Amino acid sequence: MSGYFREVYDGCKSLLVGLGITFRYMIQPVVTLQYPRQAVKMAPRYRGHIDLIPDAEAESGNKCIACGMCQRNCPSGCITLKSEKPEGAKKKVLTGYRLDFTKCSLCGLCVESCPTNALDFSKEYNLAGLQAENFVFDLLKRCEERRR
Amino acid sequence: MSELPEIFRVLAFVGGIMALVGLNAAFSVWLERKVAGHIQRRIGPKEVGPFGIFQSLADGIKLMSKQLVVPAKADPVLYRLAPALTMITAVMVFVVIPFGPALVARDINIGLLLIFAIASVNVLALLMGGWGSNNKYAVISATRAVSQNVAYEVPMLITVVTMVMIAGSMNLNTIVGQQQNLLQWYIFPWNGSLLLPVSFLIFFVCAMAETNRAPFDLGEAESELVAGFHTEYGGMGFGLFFLGEYGHVFVGCALASILFLGGWQCPFGWLPGIHWLLLKTYLLVFVVMWVRWTYPRTTLYGLLNLSWKVLVPFSLAILVLTAAMLKVF
Ligand code: SF4
Ligand code: SF4
Image (tube, rainbow over all chains, first blue to last red):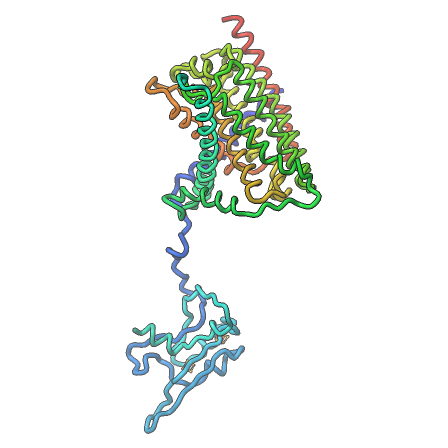
């Protein structure tokens, strides 16, 4: 009999403890963000698609020397470079950097292999599109835009 | 309002009660979402209107614009009648609830009895809906709802009998009239029986179980039975079940505040009136929601055990104790 009352008492008590916990949670500040209006800062090692780093010092606006290492190293063949050697110039100049993100596995080999550290991962995660073409990026243009 | 011709009085009350049931459901849905949100440390609705207050209105419009699909082989009569019946019972019990000294649609001397007579028809609506929709989950859910209602009706009625013995009346307005200030509320042990707070607890738990609210929502256990008895209902059929459910929650809480917390009386004797009843009721409604978002659903055995092994013996003991105390003092 005393076991019965004990059980009822313990039951009621544990229920009250539970209510107390949820009440404390209720009056604490909310932890969620209102997504389209607010967003969390991406972690520093987040891997979005790759990006040419804008460089203010370089004449071309980025550090790329058009060596083609990234293109050769990419296991999925996402990168297509265009470069030309203007009359009288000593070095090649990058004229187009096309990334086909639909095939990219974000392995990072391009970033690793770049001799001049011209590439990094962007923090871009709001990617949605209706066609595969929406995920083909012109990184040179993006770099120009970011520099401005 | 008594000087108005009877027909206007009736129309005014019908309109008022319908509006109250609708507004109550809209407000309760919003409150429920806000409470659920904040307990989970989210914000809850915030886009539609200030603080998302019009969210339920938007939901209502969505529900009304949906097509009503009657499943093949569903019982044509029962299937259509069930949502209307829960709504009817929810609206009818409002007839005897005293919102203020003179603000009661029908001040009859067996008001309390009438509420229980009508409210228990609600379970018939659930049974009809579950049976009529030709869906096995709905039938399982309906039988569960019935066994649950039968189990909880018993301790609830015993508690109510205790209250009637103390108050000496079944007229709700008389019962409220006896609790003029905080010290005379029937929740306190010096007003008739030492175990009155326990009575209140039993009544409240039973009211929660009768309205199929979590943690007693075995009738619509989403994880097991899809949506329970309203699995096959869409659009406004579902909407009516919802309106009815929140109507019953309101009535349960209003009744608890009338029986134990002084109804429309002010705890300190200022300005008695409808606002006090609404305040107390919505405080209890808040507690119901708080409980819902705190506890997981019980099992069917747990639920029936709680009723037959704990609530019934306790309420019977209180009944006997109260009878003895009333006789002696
Ligand atoms: S991350 Fe890997 S797959 Fe993507 S472009 Fe660079 S090398 Fe290619
Ligand atoms: S590896 Fe670096 S420097 Fe070479 S082409 Fe690619 S981005 Fe340019």
